[in-house]
Length: 183
Length: 159
Image 1 (cartoon, rainbow over the protein chains, first blue to last red):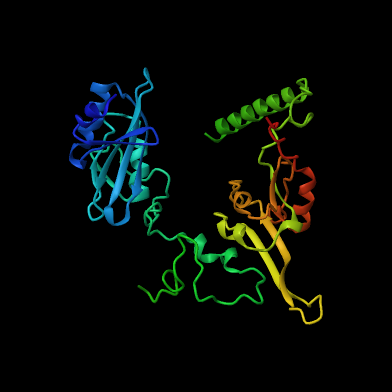
Image 2: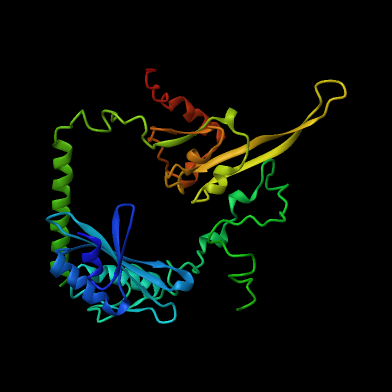
């Protein structure tokens, strides 16, 4: 499978770590997956998931492979953060239905034309989309970070530092929770 | 309705008992795990051992741990000058080093990140507990695991 053929699918092909990735416009997402299956024999959907690109919206990726030649590639598209919406490919690969439900609940992306939308893993009453990067993990707020202490310090002597030591995903004090001033 | 459900319960119970009795009567394979310890490769990730003597309380492992399961307490000691007119020095002394294995996901980042080779993998795995709090191993217990750490692989021969 060569780059020219991939680009023929209406996208832009790039290679990283030996894996071809084809970026396609969101409008032709379903067509591209269908074309990959029918014209290139990439008939096995390995997985589908999302990536939170923050201001850039959300990437939706699908890894497809040809079970005969084991040729494989990533299909990638981008949806906006304001209106994360994509056509469902569950009609092309039936196995995509669960992956899309998971992506929908984890990133808040709507898949149009999905046969059975609804949460897959999260309880019905769950609020928010846990794999979005702005989602705050409660367990990171209710427990003190053990790494806040410096060398030679213990619970009695720990002093607040000029440079606030905070690991990734932990909100500033007062930014989230009961102390955020009801924002 | 109630009667049929009772009958069904009875049938389930009988079937369960049959499975249990069958297992009791079955011949035990002496080469399987509880009877024979498995031959684990030396790089197995069983438990994390602390070589306390090497620890300088730099806090790197506690900060890198994605599960926040390493707890370290230390204090600063002043070492008086050894020669007349010399300078006194400061030294960090480890008071507490604990790994909560109920949270640990065995990623090994603490071992990778340790700049002074104070943390090691040990293939030991039989440390289940009845109380989850007992899975927090304090530094004495972590130090004791050091005795189970396999020797490092031999160097390749000089050419």
